[in-house]
Image 1 (cartoon, rainbow, N blue to C red):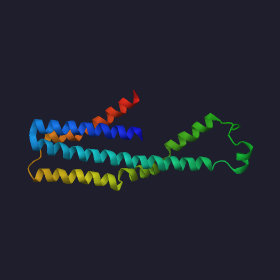
Image 2 (image 1 turned 90 degrees about the vertical axis):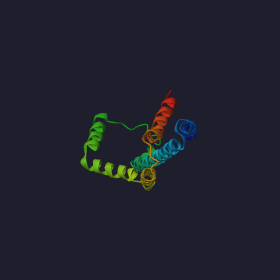
Image 3 (image 1 turned 45 degrees about the vertical axis):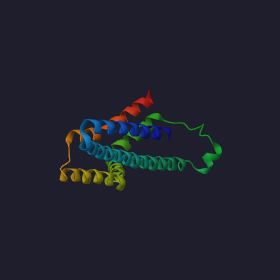
Image 4 (image 1 turned 60 degrees about the vertical axis):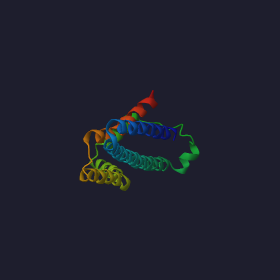
Length: 167
């Protein structure tokens, strides 16, 4: 949770810098274009993060349920800490490769991934971007350079904050 707060703080600081620079460089038009793009890009990024977070949590809980159900009650009593399990690594590798190359699993993974890719929050964010873009064009206040700057700042800050956290 600390990392999320730090990233939001970075976005807030960068947005303030963007507001000041946009107003100084190009006035109202630059400010409007950069803020529309920045907010749209931020909404898309946060909604993507949220949908993939839900996907990972659901898959990890499915995996935990599957792992728990593999052992019966007698195994739990005889070996509560799973210390005496003998593992044939060659057999495990064969099973895992079969899981990976199986077409049915590929289709299931595609279905599960598409659920998070087409989540309502994410689609709403893209719709927000599209509608505001059309509004700017229709009102004849669209300017490419500030719009692209505002659009690309969010991914750049996201990558930079992840690199800063790793180091």
